[in-house]
Image (tube, rainbow, N blue to C red; front, top):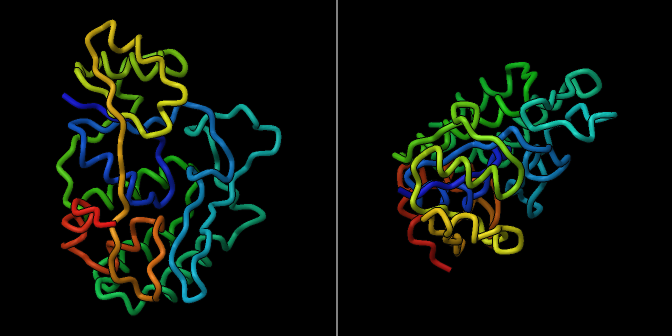
Length: 231
């Protein structure tokens, strides 16, 4: 029983979905502190000029301690952010082989006025999980009775789910208290992700884009490419 835990990023990159591939239960952790202009509210897509950030504007003034699930989108001074992002995606991916299959979802996504950042992110994540045809069980942390901070919270989530293995991101080596897990019979393993290379709309290949880059270019073959992880 492998459990992995990650914050709900915006338009996540392929490493996010590789993590989902490798576990039995994947937990979306949105009751922790929000870091502005990290991957929780922005990510990169491929363009004819290289790449560009797509950033969701959020209300953050005086809210330095807010949790991800408390973050509100700034639809006041940035009224057209969603329309601009849809046009950027459409402009750069309209020639992608599978753009037409997913265009309706993204058009509807960016036509809706979102209030909650985490709800926007989770909507995208669930859609991409289906697009990759992943069978991993996805949980939201609110469904789990687990409290604490840092390693303690991660451990309590794993214990609540009956995990015998916790799959951490590579950076977990810098902060995890592995003894807390091992003392309770839970093994800690770390993700080792090698980014696959594939044909993009524009050349040369640039890694670390949002996963929509692969989905829009390869459709139903995306999971096979993700699993190959050809360097």
